[in-house]
Amino acid sequence: MPPMVEKRIRTGILGFDEILQGGLVPRRTYLIRGGPGSGKTTLGLHFLINGPHPGSLFVTLGESEQQLRDNAKRSGLAMESVDVLDLSPGQEESGDTYTLLTSWDVEGNSLYDSILDYVQKHQPQRILIDSLSQMRYLSADTFLFRKQVMSLLRKLTAEGATVLFTSEQGPGDDSDDSLLFLSDGVITLEQTASGRHCQVTKLRGTAFASGPHDFSLGDGGITLYPRLVPSHHGRQVEHTPLSSGLPEFDALTHGGLERGTITLLSGPTGVGKTTLGAQLMSEAAKRQERSVIYSFDEGASTFFARCRQVNLPVEEMIATGHLSFEAVEPLHYSPDSFATRVRIEIEERGTTMVMIDSLSGYQQSVRGDDLRQRVHALCRYLVNMGVTVLLVNEVFSITGEQAKVTEDGLSYLADNIVMLRYLELDGEMRKSIGVLKKRAGGFEKTLREFDMTPAGLKVGQPLHGLRGILGGIPEVTTRSENIT
Image (cartoon, rainbow, N blue to C red; front, side, top):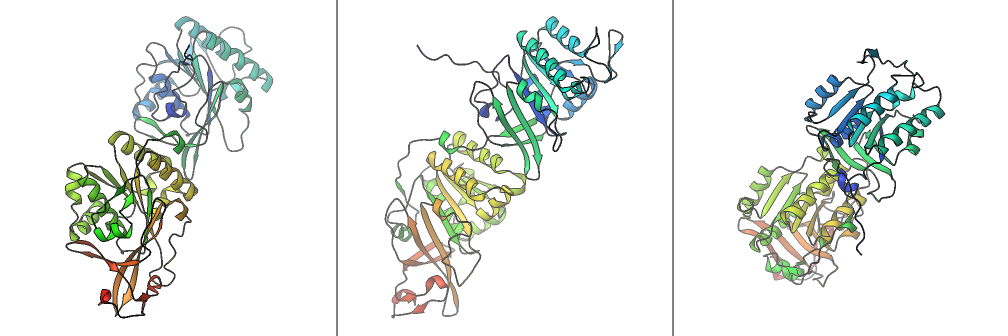
């Protein structure tokens, strides 16, 4: 007999249901905690709006109903399908006025009775109480507050409702700690210098994606970006060599770079790293495959102009859908939101090759996080999905200690390392290319001259008869026809 699949109710928040592995378990209680402006009410509104009508109830103990509806409208959230029980200070019901001085112990029209009476009469399936922090001030002590909240939540779920309730939390404030034990789930929202983060810290009886996940607030409410877990994704792929369209480069790499591997293109500024990556993508287009370039360093117009100068038809590739060039402003994206963009490209559009240009630019979006951890997760995901990855890494020295591949300790991640370097020969700046590492097969141990010409990229014959090339100023050891 197959196992019974547990029913979930979706929150309507893009990405949030994914970390909840389908949604919330019905007829349970969930605490949303966080500081002022962290997005608690907005999260709860998504939950209500995505529910049935009639059947969704907003119990407000702070803002008035009119304020709630006005604010929701400004945020692009339509509350027409949500009923509101307004118990905010100063609101009247049945001729009686509720104030923060009203105690739950007062017989008659207490807040407790008002909520329960409404629910028993209208039977809503989804309830948001915003916020229970207001009720705490009406109780004589913490024990009584906890007892009253527990009783209310149990009676609401017994009526068939799934209940979300919010609690205000300031820096160093532990006054809502008693609510943590009363809820079946705890969702924490916080706003830091690096952005907004959502973390599920408790979810009784079911699994969830742990850790902080980035989210944004804007028109349309909340968009949540689940943290990328590479092991949750995978495809079968053959690691076949891919031709570059440059016979000499294919000879250097013994047939080309393999599909589904990570290649680090390392070199100083202007040496041709991005252009070499574009060359590899032009060959992918000839195979009717789609590639994408995420450029953190330059805009589309300068990239197109440079490619035209070396006869790379990138604009034609974009017109046919075989290439996408995205200029990324790193400070507008967190690592999780950027990873979500990449996932859409891979899982919905079938992209097979991705270039990140460059790691220095991507680092700006990390904003305090561990760069290696973030790049590792993103690249492992791409490789698991069979995508060929090109990482552009700029080394900061032009000559001297040019054998250094990366300043960020990321060389361990690469399956292939291709070095592009400047060298000075007879008073002229020249370029060289070589392979330092190739896990999936052999490669030439030689260095070859590399050039960008109006006819395209050129990889020359091995540079025999020279030494000290990696230092930038080679010396001739024997006469060679390769360097005339």
